Image (cartoon, rainbow, N blue to C red; front, side, top):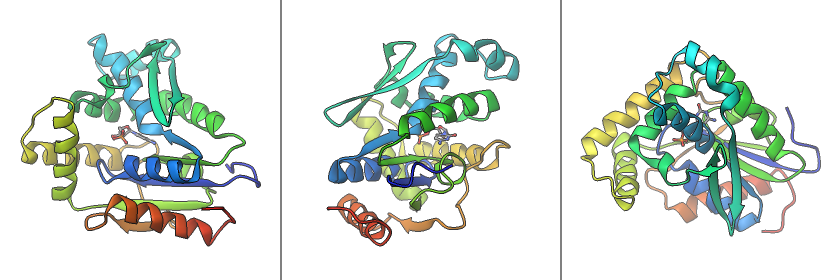
Length: 229
Ligand code: DC
């Protein structure tokens, strides 16, 4: 799957809290292109089940998949997330919603539905997208593929800070445990598991600032396409 010849696609995959969103948002802002947060879509789909107290199993997925409508809208560079036309932008960021997203993402009907939407949204434009399978499944022919890593300790600290900003106070060790549990689930599932694409460039963000990482990726893009940045 290629996004047309004229446009470029920057695809970023990596484990939980490795810095994918901050990087993608920074690139999108600098290049003035679309930022597609695929994780937000899985988070919204997971929330559908959590809100109804439904177990994540095949029967429930098949029964409810057609009733789940996920939309991303953009306002002044901020992504707003809608589940069945109700805004859930903040509600999808809790620890519970993170695990729910990972739980729902194991099921093929969910992946097929969101994959279709992701390709439709990216069609005909320059885009930076991030997730777990964007370099391997969504856009295997992306112009530039990045695989982000960072040590579990720094990831836990970053995530702990994000959660605290939203009022969820949690011990760093517990945050770390949850991140690693989610990574294990995301890398070992049958459908589109998280893995490094052969031609992806690995960047370890442990010691890098956000700005450094953004500049590094834009320099890599410049080696591949002509851009004004
Ligand atoms: O990037 P994130 O933490 O918002 O993603 C939440 C979960 O959604 C992640 O643990 C697995 C799932 N996901 C996925 O399976 N495929 C993607 N492309 C993006 C996210």
